[in-house]
Each structure stands twice: as structure tokens, then as C-alpha cells.
Length: 386
Ligand SMILES: Cc1ncc(COP(=O)(O)O)c(C=O)c1O
Image 1 (cartoon, protein in one colour):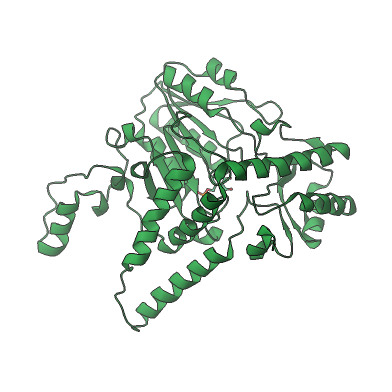
Image 2 (cartoon, protein in one colour):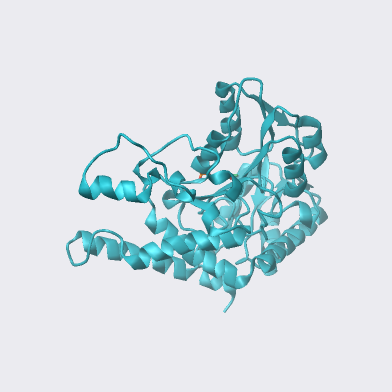
């Protein structure tokens, strides 16, 4: 049995579309079904408390531990957040900004991130967008743009439409030399890249679960937010809820009485977790993260980059123009230009190949469940579709 056979979505089609939605292993689909069946049976009064059982609560928490592992951080530095957007907004909201400060990013950032950067104008900060060249931005461009009034440097890792990988270590050094924080949207690489958040000097990292972490469908996504331990208690989140109270105060106010005129915020990462907990998504991603870790993140990165290289070689041989760098250390997936790319995408879909039209080209984003044999089939089908 090939690995892809354990991912039902990829059995009868070539799924080069993980940057849109990850395929799930059968075991993760089973966990989601089991969780839902359990909670529904409790709601029907068929036995047991309607509150989540210890088993699910423990699995959800374990998801945090596993996420910390795949990004190279520790469990106490990871918060549950509803999605990447909330994670990114939380991180921005924690950094104090004054009139005259600036926020540095690039014109490669995902629309959500660009919007959050622009919103900082309302807090008096100037957004600075470094222009890309050929779908890449060099770390030296950050040196030219960051100054002592820069408070945040923000990038996506990887770039949403072409898989370009920033040199995060070099960028964090520039940011830190000027007293700025590095915030990263890692949605397009957490789960496929051998991440090292600590080693690379990343201060905040937000990610949604439904792509490379294979955490279930888009509609049921959840997210994680990593915050370097040195910032968790020193920087304040722009929101609060009863979960952000010290646990003994919260318990008193529910069971023994009600007296909330003396707010005592709790310490630690949980003070950021004010949203309903999306248990179904977290138990799903917990299972998928175990599958990823069993495989090994370095092995997965090498495998996916190898498929990318085979795609690039084949596309260049056919004379296509790439929107992605050729070098393996600079990309995790691939985008190429093809005339009538939207039509071609539809024809490919009809022939059983799933890719995405992005920024004037086609984005091909294989994961570890894909194999090089699929590249040959894809190139043949591309010929027929053009
Ligand atoms: C870079 C990046 N960030 C975030 C998201 C999705 O974020 P959210 O789940 O918060 O909508 C995407 C989805 O395509 C993405 O490409």
C-alpha cells in the first residue's frame, strides 16, 4: 500500500492542493467522526455529561504539545486561537505602537496579513511594504527598510501563492537589532517545514490547522499562536474574558459567588484563550500531528522539496515560466505561468488533478502523501489541458 492510499482524498485524484486544504489520514477522519458521535450521543441524553470527557480534553491539550514540537518551541508558549487571522491580530495587538512608529512587511504577504498591517495606521503606525522581485524578497531589503521606529516586522512563511521561503533567522536579527518584534504567519509551512521558531528568533507565529497540519475541513478550522516565553506575561492582549482570570478567582465567581470588581489576570499563555475551544478541530489536528511527527519533519520537508524539484525540472523543460525560485532552500511549493491558467485549472480538475489558480499562474502544492510518480502523470495531463 502506498502512503497516499491512507489519505482517501488523494486515492482517485492527484491532490497538489495542500496550500488550499490538506488531505486527512483515515485515522484523523475516524477521530472526527468518533468525537462527533460521542458528543451527539451525550446531547441526546444517552449517557454521560454534556461537558467534554477527560479523554478528549487530554487529546486537545496534547495537540498543543505536538504543535510546539513541530515548530521547535515549548508547550507553554502555544495558545489555542480560532484561526491564523485571530492569531495574527492578537500578536499585532500585543505590541505597543505610537504615532510615528512603523510596521515593515512585503508585498508578498497574504491579503489577510496586508489588511492587518494597514489597519495599524489607526494606531498611528506607518505600513512599509517592501517590493518583491520575481516572487522573492532578500533579507538585505529588510535591513534597508527597518529602522529604530520599526516595532513589527511581519512575513508569511511560506508565501501563500508561490511557496517562497524567507530567511527568517536573518530577518529576525535585523528586527531585533532595532528593537522590533518578528511576527510570522506560518499557515503555509507549519506541518511541512522543519521549523525552528526558537533558533530562527521568531517572536510570534500564528497558523491555521486545515492545510499542512491536515486538521480537517476548512469549515471546522482552528489555530495555534506561538509566543516566545519572554513576551507572554510582559505584553498584554487587547481582550479579556473569564478565562483570563486567575483560575481560583474564576472558580469562586462561578461556584461560590459573584464578585468581579477586582480583576486579577492569570499568568501564562492561557490568558490569551478566550474563544470556544473547537474541540473537534483540535482532536483532529492532534491525530494528524502525530502522523506527521511519526514520519519526521525533516524527512517530510526533503520529500516535498524533492517533488517540487521534479515539477520544476519538468515545467522548465516544457518552457514554462516559474513564479517560484528554483533553489530548494528558497521554496516549499511551486507556481508557474500558463496562458489561460483559469481554464487550464478547470481542465486539470476534470482530469483528476487538483491545483489552484493564484496570482496569474497555477499553484502546485504537494505534501508528503504525494509521490514523484504523480509528477509524471501531472505533466502528461498538463499537456492535454493546454
Ligand atoms: C498565508 C495564509 N494565512 C492564513 C490563511 C487562512 O487564514 P484563516 O484560517 O485565519 O482564514 C491562508 C489561507 O489561504 C493563508 O494562505
